[in-house]
Image (cartoon, rainbow over all chains, first blue to last red; front, side):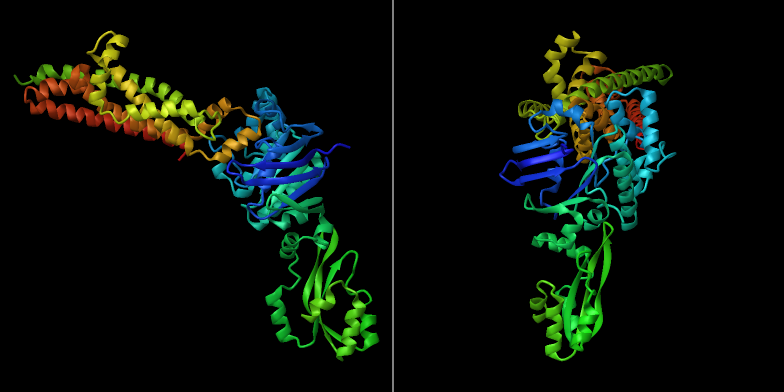
Length: 338
Length: 220
């Protein structure tokens, strides 16, 4: 099966020598949602623009449905771009056109007849929940509605791939949720492959199947979303994941917890492979150790449990050490001894 | 000999008509020319939709040579060219030529600066849909910049009324000519007052019209 989008050792160097993208390889299977996360300046935006040829790679190749587009040239790229929709952080709607006019634009560009284009545009506006708003102008709409127009405009030509450039970063949390839900429908109901870039792990957690983490133009880690969240291997990934896993106490919080709780503090990660409290009560009973739950929480990532709990163990030091050893959580002994 | 107002009014009317004619023809010609030059200037700049360093530099230099020249000097300097193109150096039609040349480059700069104010993201969106450079210029950039463009053209319209009066003083016809020959050369204050009032009225109407149109375009 050929990937909908594939990058092979792609690099993009800008005049002046800055390497925005530095040897990236990744593959997006058709029908999936792929997220690229990273801090601003990590090269995400450039990476996304390589996919529809808005940027030409300095080296490496970009494949769409198996076709190499990296050496096509602007003129031959244009018809291909109609099969790739794109939405933007600042929506980038045409202010001089109505909502309907915005959605009509790519259809007329593709040479569709007036009546057919109008029918298609209205059908698409209905899909994004904006039926009846066609005659309004972008500045009369809320941010969430504007992004819906952006999505309708990007989907009007029925592309196979949708590129999302920080699509929810300018929206408030509730509107973000609505737009993410809509993008989920776009993927499931229309079968559109989505490649998105974001700095919000929330987006990755709710929408993506796979994720790649970028830093300094390179992909430092990638994989299935739950795996990356549950077992991050790279420091940057761990930092991103931690912000989403509020339950794991950071250093200052750990200080405060210690001042409140004199006993031994242990933080137990909860993943679907290691239910933290399983076998805990037997272990505690065996060694005569008592415990208090001092911090933590367990949430869900793609329908699987993820989080952590921090416990205070109370008892004779030797017994507590025996419990800690018995928990067999990697790295726990060192972390607890700090 | 002072003006006899019982017979002088028709002269004022004729002169006003000539001024309006000169100004409107010039505006029309310089808008077309200025759009062409301005769009080219915008498109050929570095990072533009059709970058060309050479074309951009040539046009930029040409504009910078023509624009600082005071209009009264430009009329005189262009006079031989005017005679070649129009066939004469005096009269209303002869005034239109230098006015158009100067206004075209003024409009070009107005067009360029207003296009530059259009958000780059909108252009990127059009590119991502597969639009080519020419289509982006005409169906995205010009409509998106239309409101401020109309205001810019209004500014040019007012400046043209001023130009036409200057042209009038060197044989161009119109209200300026009237003010010079009857008001200034014959020390007739009443003619001076009337012509100034006519010019003020013309400028006011031009500005009013421009505001109206731009408001309609901007929907504010």
